[in-house]
Length: 243
Length: 101
Image 1 (cartoon, rainbow over the protein chains, first blue to last red):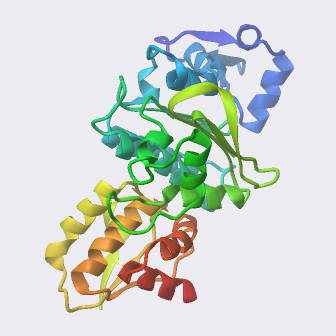
Image 2: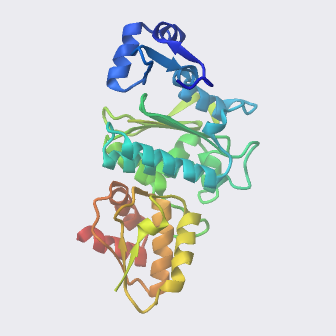
Image 3: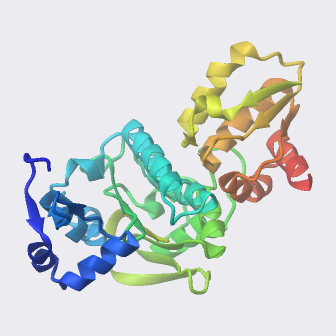
């Protein structure tokens, strides 16, 4: 046992997570939450692992995208610069390839979708970050989610450079996800979100993406895209990928 | 025919700047008169942005003599139809030939 880190027995771990001992045993069987064993075969849990497991990544990412002042983030979820984001996406891809519950095709597509969304944040905000640069990027394979968020200018403002007549967040998201922007001028456009949409509509993963007061959802249950208005404003962009 | 193995650039290929960087790295080894083929083997993911930038520069460099080798890579197969629709130039022609195959 690594004596430098706090460990707890199953009862204490269950209390910390608000579940029963049996639930933890089931989670261990299904690979959702790993337990270690003492020489006497008793389960024990690393307290740091439990804290990470109990973190609500969706709420943390949403706080990054919506709060007036940028909240403090654990460093492992914050990519200030594109190179850091790229290396972390590559690391995620390698971990997905090793995950027996994820097919090679799904690993490829999840890495594409996360990579394209996060890269968009940098490509469209470089030199124009509203306050704090960078991207919130976190994933939890046991919960089968990937969360990305930025405090940039948002989809509408960046798209208005090529479509000045856009007036609402919902229209901007519709253009971003459905209209092919041809050519290379006046700004290079990757049409990456059209590919993201095609992947999500194949129902291999689900997507929620918010910017301003617009929200795009493509659930795995239907694979059908919906674009709506919400009440809470997201400063830049916020995305949750379910798989 | 010269073959470019994308795995030389990494397992996960993301972003336009990285696509341009990859082209600039390999350009000294390329002859604009020799057709090129691109091999996606042993790459996990290529994003549309990276692929668009890389293909645009390659096809500009040699006048469109670029072919994509058949692949089962899910990220590439997802990106090609959108690239074919978005582009009206050498890139579209290269991608359409690959999709037909």
